[in-house]
Length: 325
Image (tube, rainbow, N blue to C red; front, top):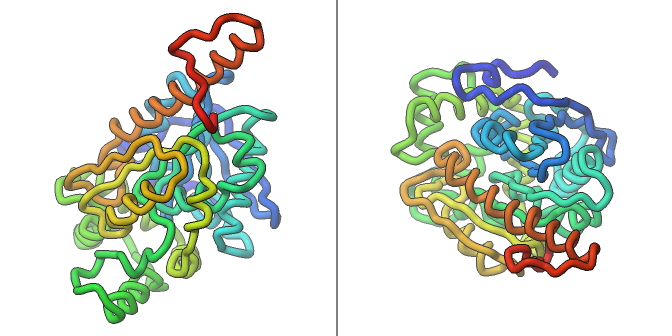
């Protein structure tokens, strides 16, 4: 599958990876994986959302890769990852495990960040052995665990069966999105971004979303429409932070609040006034800063403490070992 043209468009193009590889999932699906940044640096793994690609994380990759090893991959059917034979929450978990196996050494820890369907990926994989082996902490951006269609505010109607049915039909449409135009930019901005989003941000997101094949968009919409990952949230035991936008129509802030209440080890929730669903693009510095905080606290800090303990040295107060690290 050729690289979508949006990934080299304008200032939002992500940096060239240090290494590219293919991870093979449990059912044989091939996943395009990119590794950025220096070897030996603390690791961050990024999982993008529905209809997106690695390009969605361009701002985070550019910043973090200076002093982190950043792993980003295309979910199956997205970007340069072929569709494979199945779409389900199980395959989301399988795919993440395959990426972790292909990029991290035995016992190597990382901060895992997921946006939208990427956050659902972390929930789906939370009880998997490889997830627990490698996850030091997690960041959930603009995501939810269940009732996605019922709670969606894309249609400004009163909640009820009619809104749910029509929302499901809109989100699962097989219609091609066509080229990016001023009209489609306005539609995408309304549905997925806050009113203050800049034209550059809107254009970047539009190009990413429009590059997703309509068959893939439809297949994953069916999975999302019946999503129930509440059990996965309860199994997400590593320190987990939550970010949401108060103007998010796709996964309204009610989802973030439910996650905060259900997570066994929530280490903070940030609600961003006036921002929509695309928080890593709309608030890139804040999302990156939160990832850095998690790395500092649960990867660098824990690593220093473990090393000191192994050497019989006194553990410094700043190197506290956090539960789940």
